Length: 368
Image 1 (cartoon, rainbow, N blue to C red):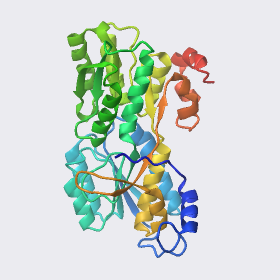
Image 2 (cartoon, helix red, strand yellow):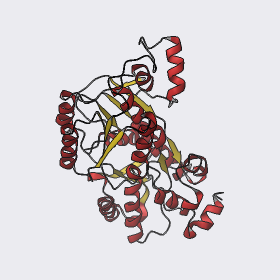
Image 3 (tube, rainbow, N blue to C red):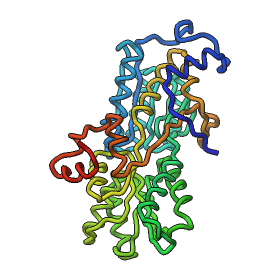
């Protein structure tokens, strides 16, 4: 059973919960005895450089929030594994050896990292799973409702196909990496919406979310199905959607079928404006990254009320049950929704989106 949490500002929730005494906890932010002060080190491990969100959004937001919460005394040790599970294991082991106070982990391979998570636990270092649910004794988890992401992608894809969509329409699925537990959930959610409405003519699980591999997979699908017989392409994220577009263009397609994505990358937003990509899923990174930073700091400082207020849900991994969690809501972004999502939230300025090549499209979409 999936449990969905509404994203609520921590300060508001803390006051209301503390005032009512519903958390069955003692103390407050001013009376609790912290296990650590502000002079803490937070290890942040990100999985890859293919998805620009990690460098451009997640890490900078975490770093800023940690500084704010620790009166600028907290330090961040940031590492990116560049899609290598062995590299991430080494990075995490070094953080354990360096005795960081807490680790925020976005795993490359959720299963392979489990032993290192246990080593952190044995060393007294809490681990907050971020975006992807790693195996092992995780202390908390913050992400999005991943099956819902797949459902939103598929529902919007069906909308893009129009009112006459039926089972004769062939859809190619380009799913995420088999080592990423989120990818399986995205796929499950999408398949649940597509089944019985269209034909899933071909489906691929793409190693490391590699756009080059995605391009090759869609080229294979075109050769098997025929370019004019592909009604839509489900791409699990924006980076791979770029590869999908390249494959279709190389096959001579000039008017793109509906193509999905995820992460609201800048180039994906521009592809949506130009009609090359139909939609992306915008996941409010400020909410997710801020929650992870707060969880990490509150956990090591012993601020149990604040920590509990952030983790009102629970999830299960293959190794650990009832992990305290927060699941943040997501939004489908089509051309008409760009202004009210990524622009309104300050993810991108209009000037960043509306470069010379997209001026006309921006004007048509009301982006000024």
